[in-house]
Length: 402
Ligand code: DLL
Image (cartoon, rainbow, N blue to C red; front, side):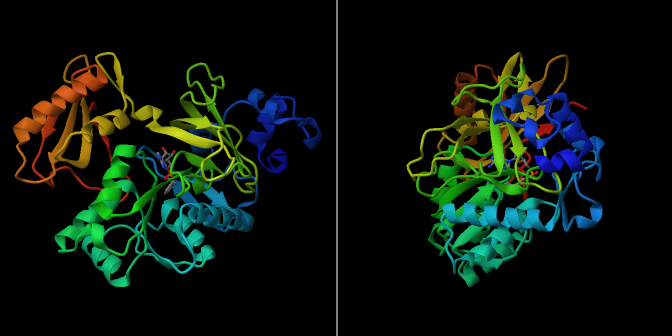
């Protein structure tokens, strides 16, 4: 945090407000809870470089966070930041089962998205063979994956399923390739979707969490041994979970909003950054023997919640219920409209194959969703292939409220 005091006026101001004006004032991390939060708007207002704690000339890389509205959030890295991030990715990917010599098919987009270059750097540092395929041209992805004999697939979980379909379309059994591991993240996904991916591709899918504002992927990652919560790299990031309404910390195990403080960032140090992501932490030791805090119940973004006749509905609940129904394909989205005074939500989904009775599926889904969510939402079972596919992060909530 020391560099914040010198380089970043807003950070220094916030530390000063909490009575911390020099390193000597920082006695314990408990003082953290007196420091005001950083929020996305602080980054937007500082667009593009005003929050950087070093001169622009010392930045060796820029990325930008995904965001559908307005200007992106620009993040910068010094040489040391890039080195730290690479090391964190190498550590995380090793924990997820990557070994030197493995062939990594990296289908995350290369560009401003941190998913492409993040896994690229980590893989190279481990000594794996990285194929920088990037996203898109899906039939070619299927061909390269098979011809080069990939051991590891890196993608968003939703795109992994699109690649699996492309393999099947090319006459290849997706479960019978050389793939062993999948390193997936960048978007919320449930254990039900993981089971579907494991089965379809015949792999072990491992969850990676991160955000550009911290570094990108490499903030918290599952271990292959347990795949039970994501180990936070606590030597670089302090994690807190707060009640998003009253802004007070909640106990381990209780779900709230994830807050991160960077400990080693040079270019863009952030204190108590509100991610908007929902999750909980556990401090129980993991079966793998690591003792770091782990993120559990990663539940999606607060602003993805939709309110249907007074009932809060999270996309992750819908995915969980949807995928427990036999014969349903793992492609879906929620359409939110406001025809009158109230929001109406429609689930668009599709059957796994053409010989499945769509009417029967519809009735089963309507029933299960009503029981599981406590409110009725409309269901539309489309033709197989009709739900739009994404080559990166899936759009699960389409807001047509105007
Ligand atoms: O998505 C970094 C990343 C890339 C992580 C690839 C893992 C793998 P951003 O584009 O800035 O960075 O988006 C960050 O994506 O705040 C979450 O809302 C969401 N997110 C990322 N990983 C997960 C995950 C990258 N495993 C935003 N589970 C975050 C749930 C995730 N949400």
